[in-house]
Image (tube, rainbow, N blue to C red; front, side):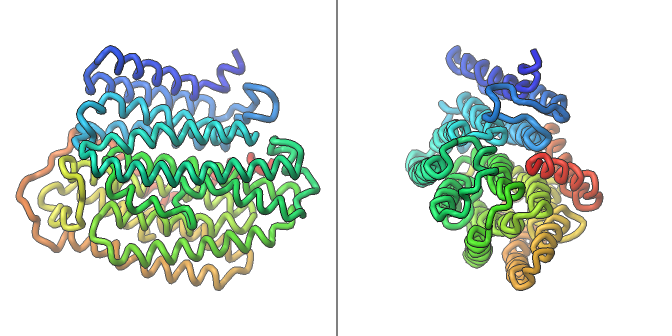
Length: 474
């Protein structure tokens, strides 16, 4: 019974997956499937909160850990799944025959992410990573436009499978170097000075760099963001980023208790951070499609996260976890509005939100708050989050690296302000008003509250992130 309690969030996720599977087989309506997903999503969040303070290993020792770190991220994943289901009220960009299947694929991917953040053994981690990936590959291909959906799904799947294969290859090097697939054995080994260790580590990180959209595995992001169905890309752009940052924190935290010589790893991650920030922001300057612009923005924000992770310090892990929670809320605010504004449109040019304050004032304000957060303006979590990320690097004496990040953040203001200009200073292309449902409006309000609360009262959220980081290092 104790083991079942430790595995409660995953069990609820598995149960809703089975129910949704039979709903598809029995031909239930999409509204019924979505209602089931929302109800079980609430139960999933409750299960995660209930297990937040639990610790233990529900399976064989050393392969799966339940601690505050894993349960905090599972709570965020459950909330993210629930929000995305709410945002997909009428997913017109999804092929009509695939409406009922979409919640099933999203919940299966969420289950994989929950298992991924608890995995403490390489093979368990790899299986969880594949369970995360394949449902999303299928969901991206559910686009109503066969040409558009096929293109985005092929690019996403091929690059994802390549990154996954590279990760598996890297894991084989780690096993060869340490003679074990357990992360605990790797963290305590004295073999970390061998070149084969660093080769294995960087190759293993490839699959998770892909999910984060970090250089050099970022090429899928702009194309897939632009052409994938709106609810599906909202899931990829928000929920999957939490899991990606979480597992990167778990892997890189292995260096801290064992006292690895991390100079080479730090240099590689530092350059990956600089290139990701610069490439993402400079490429975003010339984009005219809103989702494609946000795709390049994702690459830039991956660089900001790596800025903290390359410090190999507890403050860096804490800052990255804090930013993961904040970035989810900021990004979801933008994609929630995209799902509403572009409900019947395959592509969303920036001028699609022209004069949105006249057509949908509350949605316009939601998008404004999300953009303010991505820019890094107070009183949003984007400002505080970047402050923490930059501070972690400054504590390591990396002033010039932080200067590059600050310049990139300034460059990013230009293309975000272009969107804001369209919101309030451009005339709308159509006078048709957009009226979100009460449930969508409530979700938008909750997102705004999270973005502003984490920016104005960051203390409790920082304390949770710090506790999660200590659970990793301990």
